Image (cartoon, rainbow, N blue to C red):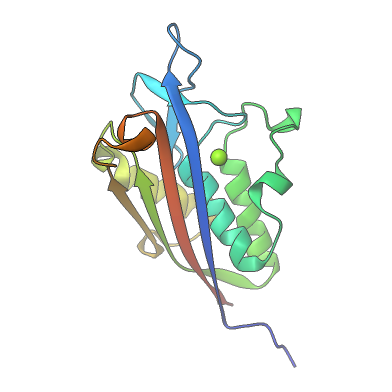
Length: 169
Ligand code: MG
C-alpha cells in the first residue's frame, strides 16, 4: 500500500544583501521572481541572487524532505557562479514530480524597501508558474516594505518567504 502523505507543506526563506550596482559598487542586476527590476542597488551573490526563487526552491525541497538549496547548489561550486536561479527551481520541481507531487498552492512574500514590486507582480507570477509547470492561479506574490527600519528597511537587503503546499498526484 502507498503510504505517502496526501499533502506536504514547506517553508523557504532567503535574504540577500544589496549593494550599489556598477560602476559605483559590486551589486548585480536586481532580479526577483525571475524578473529584472531597474534599481541602483543589487544583490551580492554567487548565483544571480534571486531571493524569491531561492525561497520558493527551499520551500519545495523542504516539503519533500530533500537537501536544501545550499546543499544542492553550493556557493563554493563554480558551476553555479552567475547562474540563473531558474535552474534551481526547475530542479526542485523535477524532484517534486519524481516524488509524485504537484503544487497545490504557493504563497510568496517579498520584503523590499524599493523599488515597488506591484508593476512586476503579474510577470513574476507568470514566470514562476511557467518554471513550476503549474497554473498561475496556484501562485500568489505579496510585496511589503520594512517600514524604513533595519537593513531591509534601509534598502541594504532584500528578503523573501515562501510557503508551499504539495498535493499527491
Ligand atoms: Mg539566496
